[in-house]
Length: 428
Image 1 (spheres, helix red, strand yellow):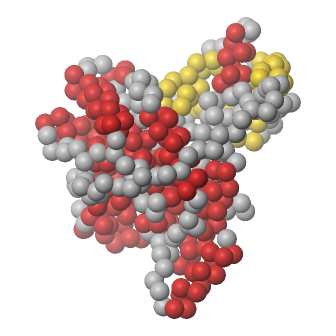
Image 2 (tube, rainbow, N blue to C red):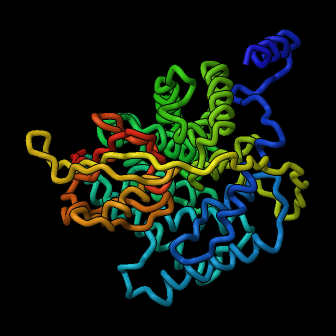
Image 3 (tube, helix red, strand yellow):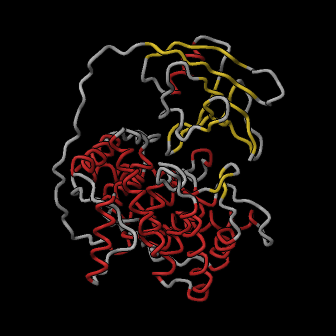
């Protein structure tokens, strides 16, 4: 990082206009590794695994368009159009506001016109979602979105990227939330939400779709940017490793002198995390790949649909297995109240490298433990444990005992030998 800082100082002495938020160039091997990980995810086309974020991330890289891209986009189009048009009466399987917003970003990434009858239906549906969320927040801003301010921001961004005007009263709810620091995730400030809101504000500012709100947008944009910078960790992350890619996108679009060195530190920390194999989930990977090419979601506004991008020549370096995996011991505990005894407390033997989901499956197979999940774009989400479903504003929290929250989901987190995992019913 020291050499990168010296380079910026040298450029400033020469009078060169260096970007205020940039990261050190990643090696071609590292960029190629991220790309190929996402291409592997693109091979999965079952309805439950289709993920527009993967397509967007790849299209915002230097990965050239190929037949695989077209097949994936066609699969997305069939899935989402059926869900919202032909199967409109089946609300149980209707994609969420965030999923629809990501799909519209994918349509823009693939240079698909949404000015058609079917496209207009989807735009209208997304605006309807936003209106519903606005009413839940209420006139005095005492309520909460049914989904989250992250999805609220993503929906505004998707409409803005397509140059679709968002009503001022809908934008005002997000502006108020930004300035009053209500972007919380389980009592902690959510860098992911702040970053997505910042991207939405930057898009609105660039598009000029809400000129009457321009002073408020500028003020909120600066406030959110400062909050993101305040969340920098000693390791250099913004919030944590998985929120940092989106935070860097936001800072690239709303740069300041204060963010210059913080961006370099975050970039170096992310490269280290990549080298150590920290990224296994497609969502943060698809948000990371664009910044490795100095692009963001707002780059879709200037997307050149006639651009044939160059090939990435890097390959993933495969590491051969040198020994047979050993079994490890993981303790699984379930708790609904710290004052009560554990509902479940048992140790399990699983293969080394097993995920937390593997542990839960093993526990369920051996009896006395049950759990249920629902499919999300980020992977399976625990919705019930031991027959207990969370109430309103409750959730099943995943902890490394006694009180360290897990940053990854059950399909990505890999417990270590002797570790105790606690599933705790928590409120937010």
